[in-house]
Image 1 (tube, rainbow, N blue to C red):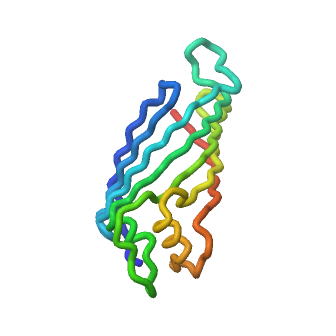
Image 2: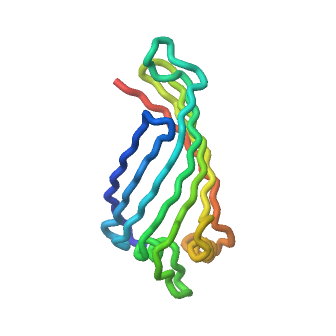
Length: 154
């Protein structure tokens, strides 16, 4: 598949009890498709900071998100070579995630997440994901994803 580039816009309201994050992504080369994602989550301080108003030392954030792709994005990412492309817009990935952030010291933070992603609410995109053959035939549409990051600020 040809390489591509994306233009992404992300906006969130982190200081509310339910923290919404909206993402818009435009593929500029491969399929020119658009993707929208809405995430809702809440950050819980497990270990508060030393001073009032200081960021927590350890925080957990459970969240859920739902993505939607226009017909170009769905066709570009879920169609197979042997079958008719999926020519419709649809709900793409539903994601349930748990993130953790540990502020080791003032300038060093370790964060990580574990997530489950699937095409739960749209039968057409779920079936297309199960037929997708980019790296070999797959009969499932879900993924378990995790990540770990160490951040240094100065």
